[in-house]
Amino acid sequence: MKISLSRFAALTAAGGMLFVSGVVGAAWVDEYKSGIVWPEPPIVAPGETVGAPPADALVLFGGTDLSQWNGGDDWKIENGYAQVQKSSISTKESFGDCQLHLEFATPEVVKGSGQGRGNSGVYLMGKYEVQILDSYDNTTYFDGQCASIYKQTPPIVNVCRKPGEWQTYDIIFTAPRFGDDGELTSPAAVTVLQNGVLVQNHFVLHGGTSYTEAPRYQKHAEKLPLSLQNHGNPTRFRNIWIRENVHAPVGEPPQAAAQD
Ligand code: MG
Image 1 (cartoon, rainbow, N blue to C red):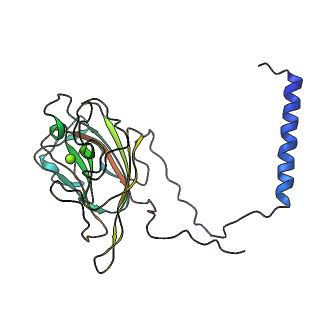
Image 2 (image 1 turned 180 degrees about the vertical axis):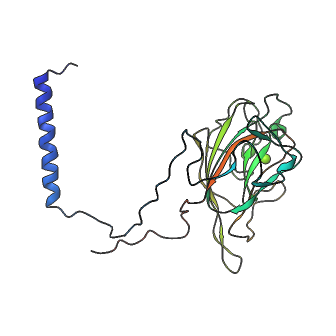
């Protein structure tokens, strides 16, 4: 539909009138203010491209060495990636609540089936596994396929790329809390985006993920090393970084608004 210049001018004038009346209106209604004095959010430079580490991230693997990890000597590093070999690896530093980014590729040459195909895993705190598996045209039990929380829940959707293609995980993790008596006071929760698509939406974990046992919690430290699983398949990793400034929503009701 064409709009004549005069008609456009009239519409613009009407819009201006509405805008003015909105401002006037706001002058004599009571504006709600929470009264909470918030600290200014820190300024963080984002990565140059989507997936690149922002300025406040700790880079755990940038493509050249696994010096941030224990066990990495066994892994093959070439062409900017690290490939699983012989052993699982664990970070030298410990982490609790976090945002984690990593990229992985299951083997291009498909071997095996079910759980034996491109199996690895991201073990948050060394205990809570976000499964890595070649789940492209490869059926297994659903709570064990790629992006499942192992043996606790399947992913919302299967958004796996083909074998050999690079994929991303963006994981937001809230660590569990325990009281002095060892009782669980707040469970772990995890949100996962795979290739930019939501596959776990704040899933509340039932406990650690185990191959042999039902999930249960056992008191552990506030922070523990992150590990990547060796399951005997040459899965590759690259661009791994982590942030701890995540303001995990643990156990605190919304703050009451202060009165003016
Ligand atoms: Mg696994």
